[in-house]
Image (cartoon, rainbow, N blue to C red; front, side):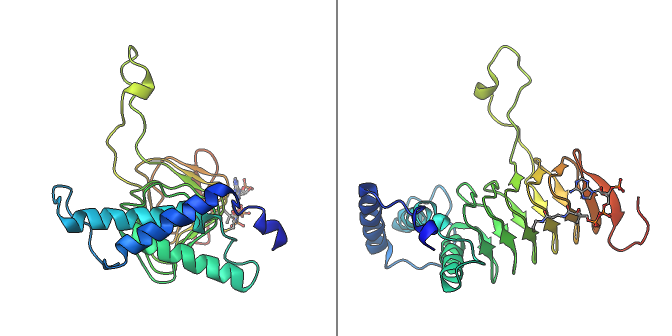
Length: 230
Ligand SMILES: CC(C)(COP(=O)(O)OP(=O)(O)OC[C@H]1O[C@@H](n2cnc3c(N)ncnc32)[C@H](O)[C@@H]1OP(=O)(O)O)[C@@H](O)C(=O)NCCC(=O)NCCS
């Protein structure tokens, strides 16, 4: 507990954060938390209120809730931390199911198009893109990295950083998937229902349902619904 307190940014800047949070909370207090995402061309009062409200939860998550303890330690403090992160993500994600657990240090960019099902988790210090689809009962170990579109690199006369991004479909993770620690999942991959991805795997191709896959590049070693290894 004492060790944890060192991670809380107790500086003069903290007072600024609290001031900004209070101001945003006051301004957004009248808006409904269940408002749906307005279209970009709707420059109405609701549009600005919606984005102001998102800004509040964004600051709340990235400057405060994200740094709170992991959910399974420090008794009530861990559970309270889980709850605060869950509340923030309910407002930031496109869809969030019941009993979602977003762990300490998780980074989901803006979370704008993240969809996560019931009883699913985003693990400690995981980094996911803003357009990920996660099913129900998905477990994610620590430090998993899931990537969005790649940089374009076709033109050798222009630096890669100025070529923009390729258009790709988002990564999708079906129900009941277990993703081990430090797994890397590359852009556009679909992970099938009930699959297990071993620690440290680099997944570049779709994973079939109930497959257990390991390694770099990830290969299927067997299927959960079959006794034989592959
Ligand atoms: C994938 C996993 C579940 C497989 O467990 P298992 O069913 O007991 O698999 P086995 O031990 O029978 O291993 C099967 C083969 O895969 C290899 N293997 C297993 N896990 C591996 C991994 N993470 N990376 C590379 N190879 C792996 C084994 O060496 C074995 O190879 P072999 O057939 O050439 O001898 C497990 O190894 C794993 O990685 N668990 C994730 C743990 C984790 O990240 N926890 C975080 C908390 S959520």
